Image 1 (cartoon, rainbow, N blue to C red):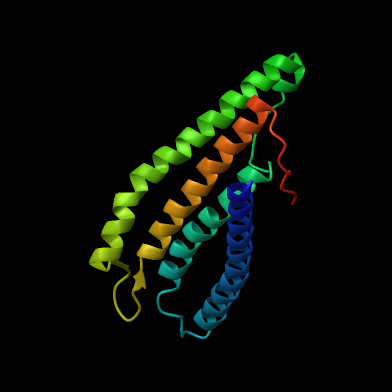
Image 2: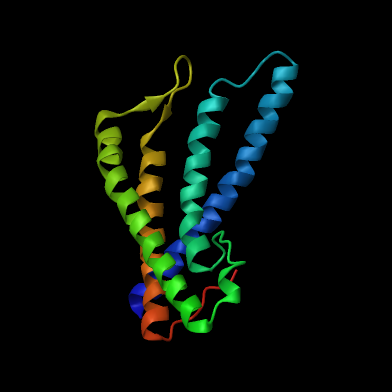
Length: 166
């Protein structure tokens, strides 16, 4: 399935991008800590970190869903019969897909508005644009919702697609 391969590729690229961004963000925070000790803090670090955390999370959520590494507590489910486990798993996949599609629907108008109005976070010397974080929510929610529905379809219909490994 071409759509699945393209989505998997995009999901992996965004996961790598988010990981590299998080790595770079460590140096921004470390630099700010060191320079604060010298009484010359980096202006806008709070805004950069706050927006970056949102971007990093939503760049990686699609991968977490598709690779099966999204947090779940299944200590009760594993004690149930296999058919009940499958039913609960499908229900949770559909619920997860629905959640992220609702989040996508809610985030899209805000993303469009923040881009068209040139919305910024922070005051003073450094203002950080908000639209990248808002569009990361839109893109990440779309991928996570699609991936939840994809793995639900795989479970329901017994489709044969490759499992995305970590």
